[in-house]
Image (cartoon, rainbow, N blue to C red; front, side):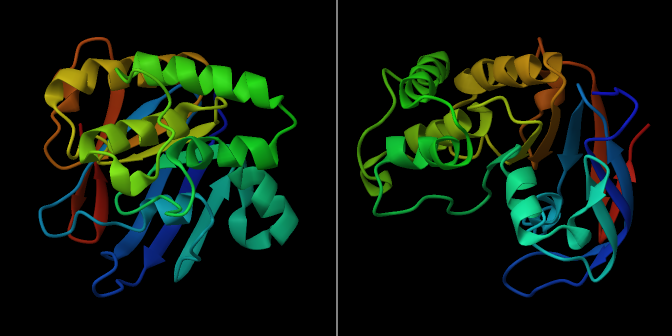
Length: 230
């Protein structure tokens, strides 16, 4: 992988706001390179953005293009997009669980269906991540039966399982005690070391003050504009 070629790139992306769903974007231009952390600070009242959906090719922009590994999501076939999307992962801002599957089934679903990895290998990695994030084991109950904090940390497991190329973290510390931030920061650092691109959307996590994180590019939403900070 060429370190100069973006994993994800937004080119003149405009997205109309969807009331009660997400805020809009205007002429967004940004490139996210391998091995980098990008921190995007969102505004109060406009915390929910379509950035992650656009980054995964789940939404089409009103104008502009989004490239993943140099390819425009809009020009891919459904099969190509599915294969590319399997190289991305996410902590969702909203609800991201299939309610009639146990958490362990949810966490491993993408790896079981989109890779040829042995199930035992997937489960072993998931269990190791669970312990790294301070859980006793990979949870094996329905999502509704877990505390908000533990369920959020289970999302962390899913996001880092399988060494994805693009990791999208939408306010991942929401509902989680700050004492767990170093655990998440360690996973982010490891992802960057293996040349993934990590996007961390935050409102008040102050993650830039967390020791051990790689140097980050800082962005801020100003209305509908994404501004790169000095």
